Image (cartoon, rainbow, N blue to C red; front, side, top):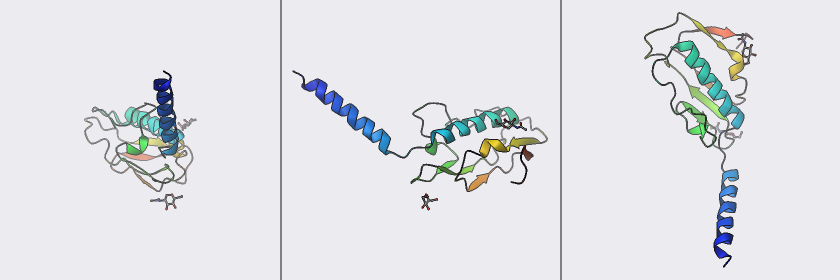
Length: 128
Ligand SMILES: *[C@@H]1O[C@H](CO)[C@@H](O)[C@H](O)[C@H]1NC(C)=O
Ligand SMILES: *[C@@H]1O[C@H](CO)[C@@H](O)[C@H](O)[C@H]1NC(C)=O
């Protein structure tokens, strides 16, 4: 009776094919979003869990994360909305600076909303 084994193998094949088909988020961009989250957390003294859907799990689909929008065709992040991320904080740093290199990964980024966060400017390369 080899059939159960063959059937299991077929299921595995179907599953693998399916995973390769779906245009998920780009791994490089997922890692960059996590870096950005860590940076925001560090910079803003946010007291509540910051961006709880942004988790470091391989299966986590970053195009489904809160405040993130991807191009459905390419899977690239095209917009993110991080406005007012600091609103619940009871300690509001005067000014802090965003490291521009945190954003270089996002090749197709069109809209980046970082308003109302007390960001004073960019670290590193100017001219953005
Ligand atoms: C998504 O990417 C494709 C291919 O680059 C482009 O043609 C399309 O306009 C993009 N869609 C959006 C909503 O940006
Ligand atoms: C910005 O981030 C990059 C990459 O993580 C790092 O190499 C660089 O030193 C940082 N720049 C500043 C001014 O902190």
